[in-house]
Image (cartoon, rainbow, N blue to C red):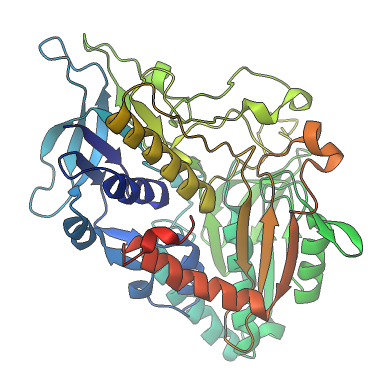
Length: 485
């Protein structure tokens, strides 16, 4: 009998757990450890954040699903990895602190034969003074945060209806943030709601970002193939900003957020201030702050994890200039550099470098997007890791190693620009490969026949359909595994 412990129940961890349980006989244990009781379809939080969808439609309890599928569930936060056991027992284990009401604060240890770190990101609001729902700005990173933002946005709409002009600031709350796509979506959903409420003319909507140009999305931009030739994502995005009358503050690092004001630094070193009546600013991410110890109890966290807190895997972490970055730098198997029976899936793995060109201000401030690896890539990686572990358990150490390199993987993204069955819009985009590869595809870095984008009402219908489809899949309903990651 083998025991696999999965830390985290987001897209990567939940996908890995369901596939692993499906592929293994019942005598093998599949265990999930996650601090939250509910699963959240995060891409739809933007609709919760404008009041167009309830929290109940984007979350569901994990325990009933795991009970039905025969997966052991611990509502707990993993804090330590002991990959060699200890001096008395070489069995590997993780230390967890329980978060459910019945065992809150209790500390336990769970042994494992195989371990998947799918802890996802820690929302690092503390990186920017005054950032976050507990301070001076809103967030849509969780369903609860999004519901708070929706209530604050409704107050703004009421003030606009009374004739009071309002400034809405949406975007990145730090110079190293990722998830520019989520901020983009929320910006245009908010703008759409203001139009629908008949108050757009009294509102100023401003997008603030660490991107060097619109349409970068932390991916060094994209070049969409069309019947009329190749159109850069910058042109695609700039046209939408111009059409909707949304202003942009580019290449910016938010230094601090005060009540009603953001103070920022631009990549050229100049400083600025932007006043606001409503601000939704995303935080930077870091790893889950797991610690690692060897058999003698020595702290080896720096060997297992990068300084960001994300786990080091089979990537090339050699420091090199942008011009020397290669698609081959990126991981393929996601196996830990320290342990042969440990993997990191989804956001939990440490990327070797950014995708977008790194930029630093004259003051030494890093202002460049961190590489995105959410959504579809997380699911594909989670499945590949599960397949590798299942093969090891069933056929031994020489079984097939399944790979999921983002340098060889395509992705589809549907970015909402406003909801509504008759008036909604969304930009449907595909990209191949995710990691730019100029050596294979020339200056564009990607296959322009497989990288394209369109915006319209049909895109909104598709995004809405995917919402219900992926909720169905995550609930492990009949034939769920036929739905692609």
